[in-house]
Length: 213
Image (cartoon, rainbow, N blue to C red; front, side, top):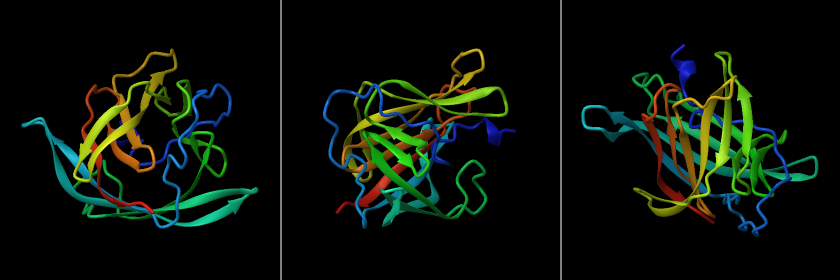
């Protein structure tokens, strides 16, 4: 049950119905999601040390590569290959070792998969329902209207911030609030993970290095 009580945004790519309505009238950045074959990113997972209230690096590394394009229903998608290494079983709430592939594209500022489900939003400030869970919560995302300055070992970035959170079926928001930070044209810089009942996150996935075409 504890495993189910996690915000899932850094372990799986979240789901929400896509929409082209109510978009921000401002012109969207070109290639915001860095959708170019050959782009690569490397991330290191960090775990909060409760004694010092700091985040310490783990042995877990995730590499992401855009390997190819795929044509689906006359739309071009980009294949993201994720490879996780370094999880020897010590970290039960982190992703398991192995390879996972996702096909994604930009649709008017929404990063979506091949069935139109949202992974990220840079185009409007509406709340998006993602999915229901089996312990009386639904999962949602919303774009923050505040840009954030994020620093990792890869550099300093000015990022969009998608909020990820749970609501109970009465509409009450749970304590947990997680984030995925992305910079225009660079990609994902930092993401967090929390327990539903806790107001502070305990896992961070930080950008360690990247190569953009």
